[in-house]
Amino acid sequence: KQEVTQIPAALSVPEGENLVLNCSFTDSAIYNLQWFRQDPGKGLTSLLLIQSSQREQTSGRLNASLDKSSGRSTLYIAASQPGDSATYLCAVSGGSYIPTFGRGTSLIVHP
Amino acid sequence: DVKVTQSSRYLVKRTGEKVFLECVQDMDHENMFWYRQDPGLGLRLIYFSYDVKMKEKGDIPEGYSVSREKKERFSLILESASTNQTSMYLCASSPALQEAFFGQGTRLTVV
Image (cartoon, rainbow over all chains, first blue to last red; front, side):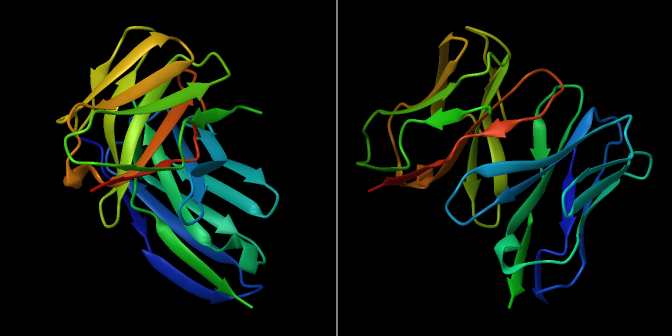
């Protein structure tokens, strides 16, 4: 059964720092990996989708990479801002097409 | 933009009541999912559906049922609500092997 782990569980950084969130998964037979953002009490907002044939995707200050063979993905956030404070979740989809989630990284960016 | 709409943001129900959570998507997606999210446990899959009238159990289906009579609508039913079903419920939809989109979530409290 696929297991997804996100490290660290929580992170607090000063505004302006570049930071890296990590996601690892046990079964490398995936079709895609998706990064989400969740604000307190709200639903999930899709940030980036990486197909299994891709190595990375970029959107604005966000860059996600995928190393399928080693079962790892990273989300890089450049020049962090207080508005980036949220929980970040990664999810992988395999043969069943069902996203399996990690437990998230709770990020606080303080001014 | 893809829109996934859950019928209620907040819901308070009494123990033993039959509860309906509705989810509607506007993009003709084949796949729809119901998750629940609890602190420390992350997102856990309750049920999913690949097509109209198709449903499959997820990891925690006990105490729940679902209905998908039309492609755009996926309903989660709590046959007899119990206090341990107090949770955040999240609906999602996706085309096969593509990006998943989530609704805003329903915070259900069973008293």
